[in-house]
Length: 186
Image 1 (cartoon, rainbow, N blue to C red):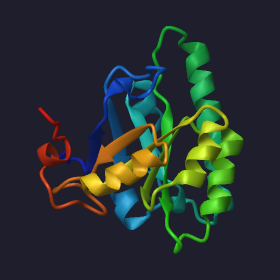
Image 2 (cartoon, one colour; image 1 turned 60 degrees about the horizontal axis):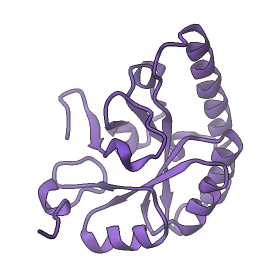
Image 3 (spheres, helix red, strand yellow; image 1 turned 135 degrees about the horizontal axis):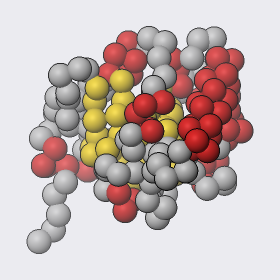
């Protein structure tokens, strides 16, 4: 769903992760950051409020800035959790463009592994090597898809969840209604 403040929110089933983490089954991605690659990271308030906050790895320029951002996010969230032990803090996510045009993918994924980013959101190509790396430390991978064929390919690669990118979404929007991607056999 597109909100009036420019945040793209993708609803995901909370049980997609065997370790439930959030009060709301939602992921908030800053649309302008995703589409225009401006410098921004999710504010700590997003995950402190129980909503997964996500940002594109490619926003970090130079690439070394991603390491700094991930360290800062981890430190701020750990401090908040320590000061508020009763709070149910959601994890954060990093978007990875899995495509041959992304010459930073290997380096960016290695940084995500180093910092044990809880959720990786991939797009474009089925992410088998990303899934293996992220599952290696216990993280989860969601994959953006625009049709059932892409969802089946991603599922075959072992992703933990599918994000149905539909008409009206920012970035590489699909052409279908969200209801079409969620069809079930009945």
